[in-house]
Image 1 (cartoon, rainbow, N blue to C red):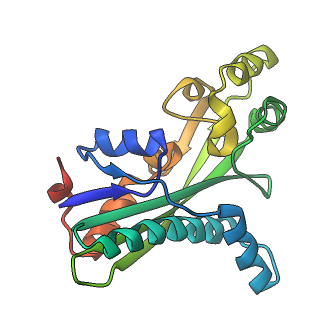
Image 2 (tube, rainbow, N blue to C red):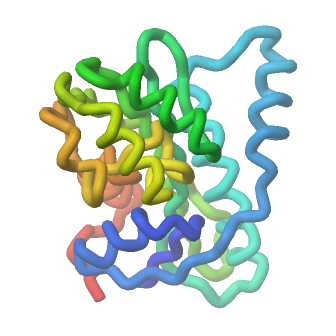
Image 3 (cartoon, one colour):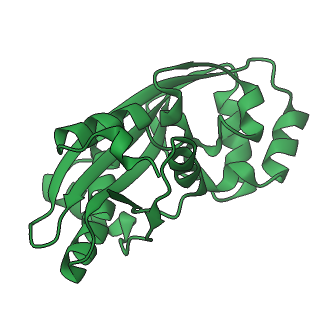
Length: 212
């Protein structure tokens, strides 16, 4: 049983490898901002964080699953995901700039936020239409209250927080500044493995059959 990760995220790839799965990786050709804007325009209001991460996860997984189904040779699962961090009623994606990452860390210091992670899994089989299962996982993340400005500056200077949802990691340099995670810890890394296992089961695939 093959697995395709509809993402080039190093964190998601690492998670699957640590779980015994060596996936094919394909970058989805999806304009995330355009997908979100179209959905919000159609509804007339902003999407809730859980709705938004699921929408984007589905868009990415569907794009790759559709391409593989057209090729006709792939037999396995396509996994797509998206994550956003919610703190104080505001939703944060990737900060991209050092100034924004610094501002967020000063706000996160001593606070607790929610990491929302959308998951879309497609079962792709030759000669059949792809079948999808979806879910959203959430984990509460609490940050240390005694983080110094100098530590924030050093962490931002490392470059790590600039290109990850919420401006932090739990499995690398940022982990020392996190005091508690309530929920599946892999959700904070980028994808809830327990959720993906459940979705695979809904599609008739046993998790251990995905091990490389």
